[in-house]
Image (cartoon, rainbow, N blue to C red; front, side):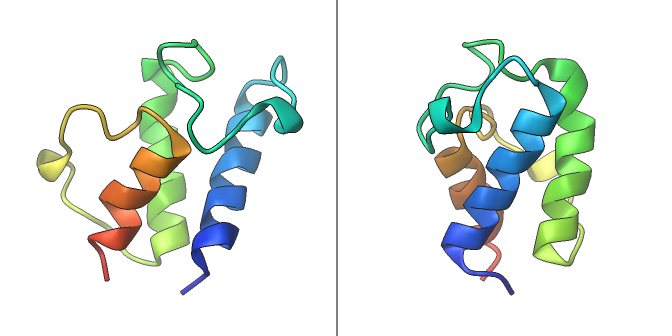
Length: 84
């Protein structure tokens, strides 16, 4: 599995690719993604696929809790820390 830093960098690169209006240097691990309209609810399914690719495994989307897509850090905590 990739390191925490590699996973977070991959997530940030994916976000910048989906929203070219944001510069990678303006995106931190704590940037509020949905509240800032950096990603929309329409991006969530694609983001889930990206998370599964980074994890190397699928997860049950019924187990997704509110707020997990708030920031890169919250995504990491929800899908990678609990996966170990």
